[in-house]
Length: 443
Image 1 (spheres, rainbow, N blue to C red):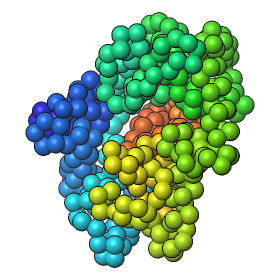
Image 2: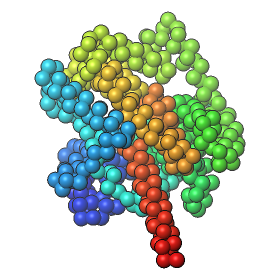
Image 3: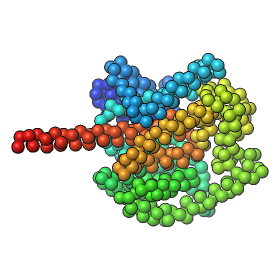
Image 4: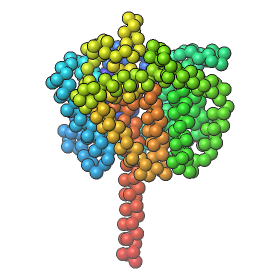
């Protein structure tokens, strides 16, 4: 099913119907906007939606390369950062295949996600109005997803794919925590918060809906990340024209404090365990301590070998890697620790796959986006983009998504929309100056 949808999306995009093509691209990227159950998604070719989204991006890029429409804006810090990392990937892939000699199928399974960075080279062909139309559709979908996400809690029914399910009873009441947040919830929330000119019906209510959806996951890092991001926005002057938002955020946080507070206070046990003698033994059953030791163990491993420092362990698959290399990792039914990929912290994945040098280059891309957004931080969309970047950096200590290169797709959408907006404004200003000049000449 997804294969046919992908083909339709590519054809529509190449025929000039870019809106529908991009919508299908995002549908594939998010595994059917998190509505399609995994067995149905994997039916046929046993590929995830993200795999089809990657084929989509490569097909569109190839069409632009053939037509000679790919641009190389060497003055852009984002382009320079991406180019540096892509060049690094070429060397890393060569060394991996030539010296580490992993199975080619395993190599491709681990390497392919990096190819999402090539989306940069065709996404700049989208105009401002198309970005805005796409956002409106994604926004509506995100509202529906958020409602379904909340309905999961009282009903116990899993209505969105992804995320995990855990029980929470620290208040003496049963509470099922679903962490399958809508894919575009964060960017949508920050755009609503920061873009004062955006006119949407029930805007305040939708902001509350998004915030409650986040808070009711009872995920400590997510809640603390939101608080820290809002605090950063206040201190850096992003909220100069949106002071009411701060008041409502604080008010709603106070209302939900009994539940959230109990969840946050439970982290003190975890922190105490992190410095106790038994912390290594408890490892996989913890959060804070587990992540500290997990990252440290992986970092020390790559730092012992110059090859690993520069290029990591390569793109070897879990099945081809020695089983007893690391002590820490989630345990399977045979009590074997997961050696490589895991979803609890991004930095373990980054250090292992890219080494210390590659991780620095990866973070260069992140910093380049932040710098680009900060150039006009008083603009609502720029401010929203900055908040998204800060929030996701904080979440990198509790999620593996930051270490996957498709993470940069949302910053790319922000980046090119901001660029198109600036270009449109400059064109209008130029036209006004020309028309004024003509008037003076005629007079």
